Image (tube, rainbow, N blue to C red; front, side):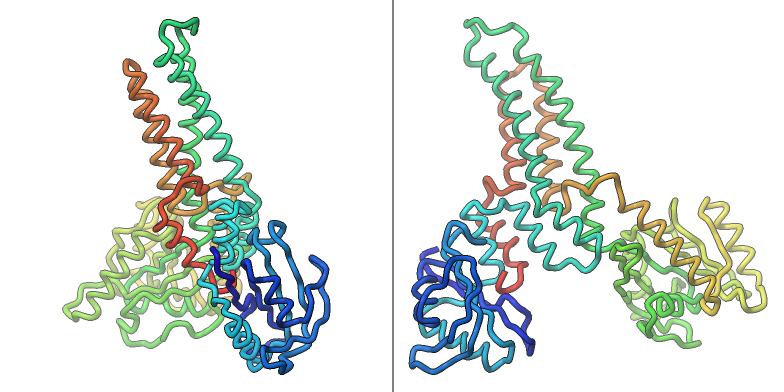
Length: 445
């Protein structure tokens, strides 16, 4: 990190104000070169910015953050200039002429991590906060940035260190005045910790869904009303609606918000037997998406005289909508209600033309989403990476508890469990993993 980096910290395009950040050993020299002098630390000061040839770039606010009291832990500065593309372009050219390097995605936050300003879990919270689209995502990201997972991980590691000390005392000092049951005292510690790790790993899926979106699949035969329902809920023409069966041939995902949580609603190809190669592929994709969904809405045209097949993907908690209740009833409606009772899923007659019907469905979906994603407190783990490491640590503790007769093996399993937990916060982590994580950040963060 011997070089000095810069990058816009505001969105590209025309704006009232654009922010340019710099960080590194040449930050102070750069501020002096462009602004004439270095302002008082952490105090916004108006300065005339000029390039290396003395040409005025803009009149800007300049902020100076000497390290280590900065975001990155290094000497840093910000230039708040007018947000026209020409102004920003001139400032970028001036910084490049001073031999500063354009930052890579996430490089500012990576430097903060490497300088001990954030741990890896908190750095991921920064990325989640930048990408937050809903209130629930914002709250969860702030919780992680605030160190919730880091604090829990530190407590878990402390318990592992206590258990490991007991094992090592029994192994290394068998003839000293050490209590005979010292290794046995580690067992309840590991058992209690194992329960916590397994519970946190199970709860991580809730955190992933808050981040990525609760997945709802619309299933049913062609012309059951799936595309019409998607458009009604999205309040726009997201899917093509025609009387021709099989219009939708691929999965159409539309992001929505219910009760402050992100939801991905998917219109899928009509489920039926077909010899059309393209439509058959659409049906396959529909079934795959539905199988991985958190909730499935089975739509059946209640006015139809044809009896559709029951989707194999339906399960407990799903919902059957008997559509087109504003039309004359056909055999399919009563049949669908009977099948819903057999599957023990609720059913309701529905029409997208009824405002009260749509309001009822939105309230029902919001209730389902809150029931699945809300909790007494936010989940500690929020990513697949966290869940994998928690499961790895739990497996090591299972192994340690099985090695009652071999304290050396039990101690080694405890060490490996601690290493897995350390990778959550980045106390130890392969370089490739760090690169993959920080590459998902935006430029300037």
